[in-house]
Length: 617
Image (tube, rainbow, N blue to C red; front, side):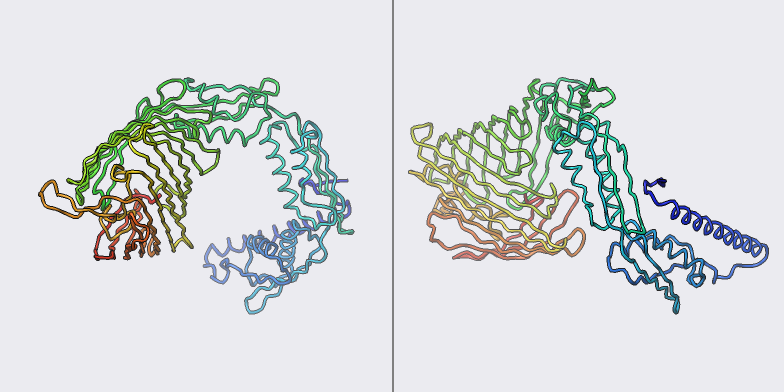
């Protein structure tokens, strides 16, 4: 039986008749267009062309078709016709419209459609009678080659959607052939081809028969890694590899490999790809092209907030300490109330990007201008971080040695040492690193120390904090934030003040100074010698905030908020709260947020201006 180039077989008589009709139309169109061309050539010798002959757009009103996908496809095909409305009364052009509509509906199984065209008051009405569609009579499928024994391959091949009795849809047929070919290549069947495909149309019986025979060829396997560039990272890359030599090839596994390589932090550029042309039998080598990061890298981060004023962070990192992938980094943080230096030595474990140990050492000095509080802290901590692949949850088991000398006016000057085993779990997910429209954050932290076991006092602390940001219709933005904390100890007066709870400030209860909300005591100001009432920190913490922001321009949002919270030694104490308006500038370097806050405390009312630069999460 003859077939056309699209693999659609028709009966000989229908094929011949269709060919003759199309040949006649082509000849007639050529003669007409040639005559029109000659006519305009003659006009061009001395006459201007009348505007009434200029090409115009036609809006077709399509009737008789209920399905949107059919109606849209008809419009797309009709848009390609180069014809004026006035010519659509001509039988030739009406036949052209009918043929165009027939072409548009055939992929959906309608091979016997009828079309009439009516032109009334410049309106072109195309009335389509689809008639009965062709239905699938028989589907013949077969796999030849190794894919026949591959369960996943068979399931994918047998998932062809068209079944006996279904209305023929050529788009489904063609899409399946393409998707099956792509699936085969993605799973190591590099020699795959369609040995036979055919769509046999029997119009008189309104039926179609489908033939699909796939030659899968053998399934190739992952071979050894080869390197383009320096290979000092060979051991690290082998650990990141999610497959073994001899495993069935999978583009998904290779994509995971590339993702891990790029997230490892060791490379400026890296990509892994299969080299099928160099396969050894069925083993396909995986070529890794890479460029290592510089031996040392430096970075600077600048920010500002009402609480701390201008602040700067200087960072240094050496990503390669040895061939096992150990790295070291250091940060210097400087602001008016706080200065700190930290160093971090990181040791990768089984999963380099999500599973590692960290040894951290640090020094911190804090002196807040709105209190008489000063502290000097030395710390050494060992952390063990782990995180499942593609999971936003990160775990952190730690043990921290902390020695803090703190001075609260003349109330107390203490040095307290603590050894604190701890555990935290955090969840972080956001749609941008800088300007966040949707994001979620949750962290639970617990630490405990026992007197006589490296600690001067019994101490236990638990903190939970969370934040949710959601944006609706790209205009309405809501952020909800909350924090809860509690301390249990046998001698609270010896708890370092940096570990106690305070509220107030930019990221707490706005309308109050940083750390202003807490239990107070009368202390002697070391500068003036006069007694003052000062915040000394509490055992319990509870804060919450709700903020609504409306985007009124591409880079601007107007905001309003309500904050509530307290830091206290008595859980029955009254809450402080604040309200106020704000405005956000969505800058290229991150959001800049301005707020005017009115604070309400049991014994005072305050005003504060808050300015924050940087992302919330």
